[in-house]
Length: 177
Image 1 (tube, rainbow, N blue to C red):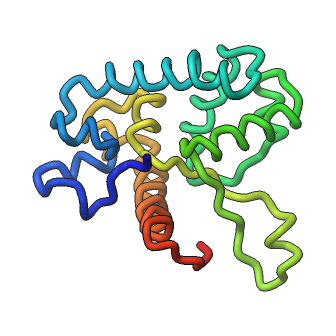
Image 2 (cartoon, rainbow, N blue to C red):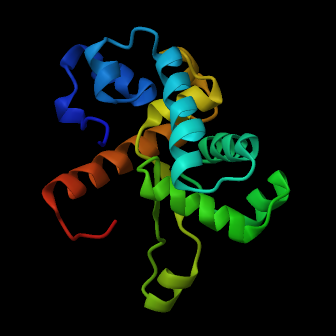
């Protein structure tokens, strides 16, 4: 299930949804203990779901990978840099990205070029479906930390792009971002 769209979030929580996310359970609980919820969500996702569905070798490295992705949202994906930082191979990074895409944690947007060949070969940008996960992994716990922090622009961009993308998915639109 995808996080709520902006229009589904109650008016009093819209401002906080930019950095606290919009998973239904968090919205319905008015973000009560959201860090605990995200911690449990990631723990269940990694330790139970991924161990069962995908043969992830080193869970600690996979979690570190998600943290690195969160710190580099709205940026061009450089798989070789991630591989170097984590001490794993590029094919491992590709597999992990594929797993995160298939489980609706993140999505990639290809670059726009007039030349179609470049669109296919150039690196995409990284976006998370829920910016609350980004905040959780990067330690953003308040609006002030979001608004004044170094990721404010990237999180805002991610939020806008994810809202557009969620709307496309819900309306079955075949438009490309």
